Length: 432
Image 1 (cartoon, rainbow, N blue to C red):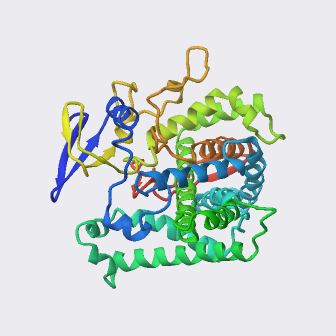
Image 2: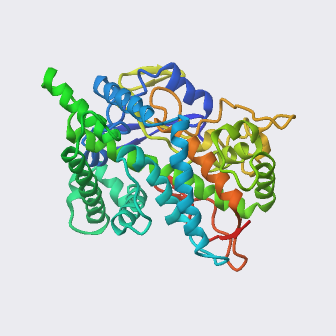
Image 3: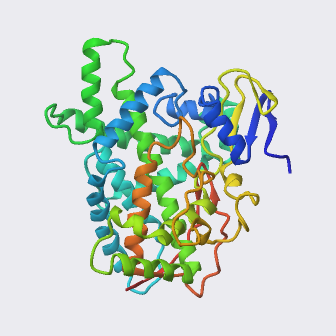
């Protein structure tokens, strides 16, 4: 209705919405230095203290912390085949849990959430948690709830009146309690790592970071590396590494249970490339274009961070013929980028073949950007792609998912929080 770039005001602050691929790319790639900052929103500042890698302001501290985080995660397998056994091992627990339901319908959310979270936990904390661990289960449900209520209209008002955050009732009190509980859990894990730290044999991300803290203390008393900053990075990894991938896998199960003919084609490809007895590996990916296209089509239709993480113009600039004032908040509407009818034919239809050429081989489309683009592209993109392929393939190798006939088809609009989650749904998993 308003075109590919438009503006509205919240109070005196301009909010700019970029709604097609060309303007998003122009902003995030061609003018990356101007559009890579984060807005200083009171709600975000209260929770993150402007630290971490997701919401921290763009600048030398962020660059240093992100570079360290990315190289350390790669050291522990991010984007490498060495992480594959951890994902495969975690699927064993997923399979055991699903088999408990037999042919009864169940809600897959807790099982998938536990599994995905355990993979990031194995890299960051050096351990996984049992699915019946009460503290862990509580933490995952709190995290999901926190992301959902963060876009509650009353909570958003904190950005206009920050004192609302401290009110002792309603969503404000609930959000403060969620932040407190997650903080307590993560700080306890960091304290355990500090106590057991072996400088000669670092086991995980926290160990490596603590060693970096100790190293920098010797040479730089004003270093940004400290245990407080570590807490916010771990929070980012834990929340971002769990919620987005969990929701994507859940959307995959929902779409495939509602499109049995697509599910069948994926299973046929699994049969011909992998068979039923061998575990899927990343080496299989190149031989399974339809499976890959199906996952990509689910990502296109459900973009789990539909408005991306907001950016801020760090200086006044001319962009696409408009003057964008310094401090303007920029939202990249990735939902509309992936539903643009001028790029995607019949964009509201679920059609995996749109990602295949006439020979059935995978098409790489530059307009497919579910992880964002530019300097602040999702740091966990490679991990997410590994998890999605190995988990979805393993699930369909062992089970056929049916949507219960006695249940009304769920709304496919999703539940909009900071991420886009499917509404709770049940499935039946028939053992193959």
